Image 1 (cartoon, rainbow, N blue to C red):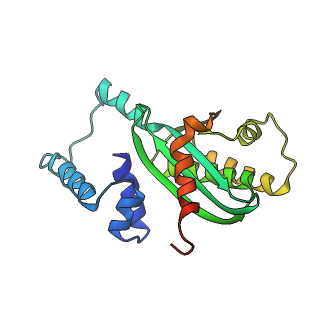
Image 2 (image 1 turned 45 degrees about the vertical axis):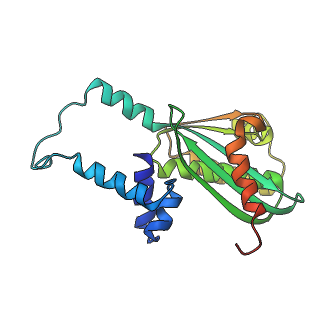
Image 3 (image 1 turned 90 degrees about the vertical axis):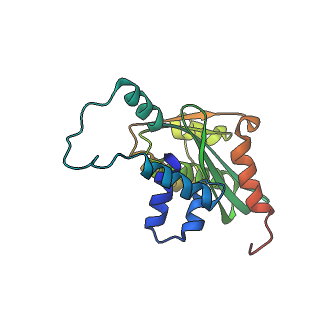
Length: 202
């Protein structure tokens, strides 16, 4: 359901349906289409004919709560520091299911700037997925400690990016920040490096 919600939001922006499917994390356009058709078939006829919505079963409340709490792994990479840079974010459900991923080239940036761009990308991905609570996991101890207020931000550019990240985080009920090893952040790390490995202009 996360991926469908993200697909529809991307589609509303005017994106090509096939590209929107890939952006939302579907392997193929057919997979997305089949899931939409399956969802439509599961709705009984007359389900919306003025029937008031009753209380949700306890199990449904639990599922909804799990959907609203996401874990988002983010990463940034710079070859040259400063040099060609990229950022990536991968969202997981509370049950550990990979839901969606994003990555992008950033032009020239330092490694710390790229890490912050990855953080902002991850927060916006969580917003698009409809999360209420987010745990950000990244392998930049500096950024994690700065976002927690444990380290001062002395670089003006990083200060601007941190403010942008705080603004993106302000819409959620709760945002947690956790430092993880690079090995624990392998999905986001791989995506960020794949962007830098692409031929120029690809």
